[in-house]
Image (cartoon, rainbow, N blue to C red):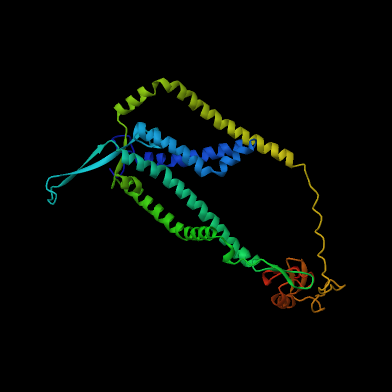
Length: 368
């Protein structure tokens, strides 16, 4: 048989293992959604969402530790009637002969394997989530820098002048003003942004390879973590389920109420989401705010170049503007060639004398 789809034997099917693997992420999405709905009326819940990774890691730590201690399986595996078993391979016959055979024996988990299982189930997913968050932030920062330029390059070398054109204070953004801790943090983030895609691709590739081999019945290990720990996931025997049922018999009524309450809670949360969205639409739809007033015009410095009465002329060359470009710090428009030469030489706006660089020059396309 190529792969197992039925419920026979102690070896779980591929679909059982896949469902158990996807349960933690589904549980996290459901909890995040529920807290997001509650946060609409209870803003303090946003503090929990700000530390979503830490809160979920703490919750899974409690669940996985309790489940491994009581059932020798993870929380998701125990819900699907699965158990973890330590693998011991014995070779029968001559080790080098053709008749040598490997016999796999399953035993209970050792304390070391339980601790390492918690590491693989809780700590490694938490670190992966943090690395993914750092990578996304660095990727967004790199995208913004490619579009608008780096913040330090745009504003780090600007100088402020008084009315006579003398520099008042320098805001040079050199590395000497940055703390050692901040520079180290930036280097670590850049290293993570460069290495994380390769680490993620390698992890996904190994996971796919192990799952494919497990599906084809070529290995008993569903993942690299289980292989490293020397653990097989097996179906719980009837005796184990009977013992667990006896231990939980006194709590069956509570579990039934909990299941019913969970279904009612999901329905309640969906109703709340619809109600809050409808109320927000009703409140925001009729409200039309007037447009904000325009900003005040820039003030012409006493020693700055005066503005011509004809607004179509360039203040620098007193000719009709060619390739009109605006200095973003003041909002005034000049010829591109004129303002580029002036700003490159004096590092300021010709009219307002506000500090500026060539990065503050923006081409206007109203005449295109």
